Image (cartoon, rainbow, N blue to C red; front, side):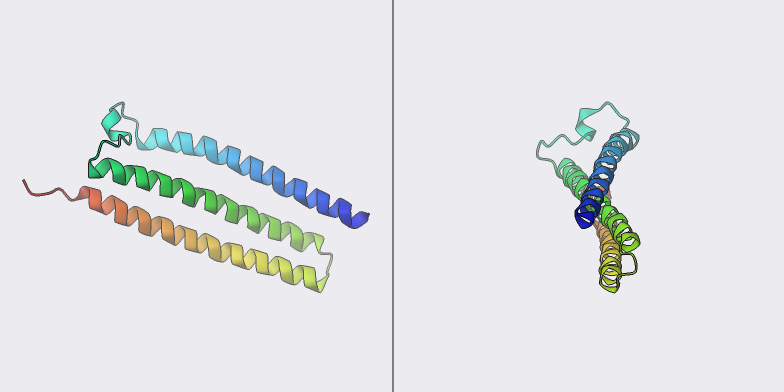
Length: 133
């Protein structure tokens, strides 16, 4: 019975952290979008009419949202690993499992940050090149 209560508490904590992170990410992304594109020109806000720049902006925005979601998920997994580590009560198997969760989550965060940097560099640098007239 005690084990079930502990599991339910862990699930509720992880669920609350996920809801909080998603809510925070939603508010941050809307304010971030307002800072990035404060213009009222609809052609600069991702109008997909066939020109290459707007398609690049659309792909960049989609990839950034996806990588942001994965980053939040990785941070939640680090928190879950920490909670598992604390609640393992010295159990060697639980401590080892928690360390693996934290390690793999940190590796995932590093991979996500590298992917974010590479994608933004590649897609942003191509839009600065103007064809010769």
